[in-house]
Image (tube, rainbow over all chains, first blue to last red; front, side):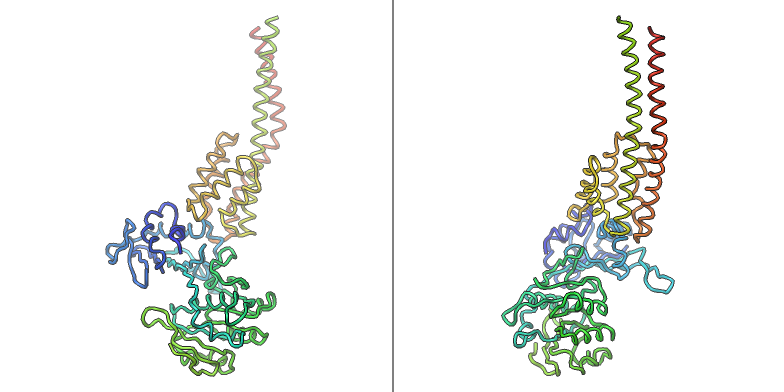
Length: 316
Length: 172
């Protein structure tokens, strides 16, 4: 992550204010804009604030409070002065910009006649989530994902912010490029929210491997079968299973001979087993490996790796 | 002898003035045609290609020639993420300098220069419709100018030669 990348997130006129924050690009995690509220930045797991001169301060009273016009100008810049071109993303509540950084949005929702989200106006809250690819994040898991040179169906389990997407991204990269445990294979990624590959204008901004095809912005249920039909992958990867439909589509993909890599929100294997839509696949033995992650000490770590029957293989 | 030379000089001067006026009319027709085609290209790239405005400018610089090519190329360069220029300001500055000195009327010039004021629609349909309105305005002006050009150019040339003749007779 380079300083210039952070500065590029802001319009030319306000870049001077962000130079000090950009100097700490390596540890920068989030920049949060709320109209009329202190402007906060998360650096190295700690909340800080930014004052009018761009200095990083630790108290909210000293922080600058962005006006609605500033937030609107930033949104226009992030959308490259073409909000219409990002209407689909805005409808989902986020944008992905160059570098794979995610911009979360909140404001007033415009519903259509069926009550579904048509668009968003008066966007007054922006959460810029800085993408950091951690190459080697999956090094300790890779030996357990391969068996006799073949990728095992693996489910990564972690609470929000536990690092499952980071780990999934690195597993995809290593499976695609090949490791000492197995040769590189074709991987298809159904990247519904552009979080894994961080695609911008269709090009992955993160390294997801040399044999990886990315279906960006496509729903998991439609994307998985589409990827199998069109790209003939040996491994299929998806992030954040969250419904019965997702799980059914995943199971169908597994039935086509694809190996599966997936993630799900949860604290433990037991908790996952209590979710209706997950219980079924666990009982059916779809997955051969469960990797549980946590961040109890503020740092992401592996809490345990289990086999398909739920037996602990390795404890964190 | 000198009278005849003076006579022809006055006549040629007036005819030349008439020709220049007619050429300006022709140039105006040409620029109006280019401008309404540019807006049509913009509308197409937005509604079908769903490109962002800086990308549209890059495409316009590839599709057009002369001052327009340079102008749109400069807008693209300045509004790229790396440079972060404000699109509305850059557009206004570049188009003002590009259209300066061209034989266009003030409202035609304003329609193009002020276009970014109408470019904040949240979906491509509304956005391209708004550009379509500016395009329709310029197309109307172009058709009108083209229709009147033939008649007016003949009239300007005839009047200028007749004025020359009259001046020469009166003065000599």
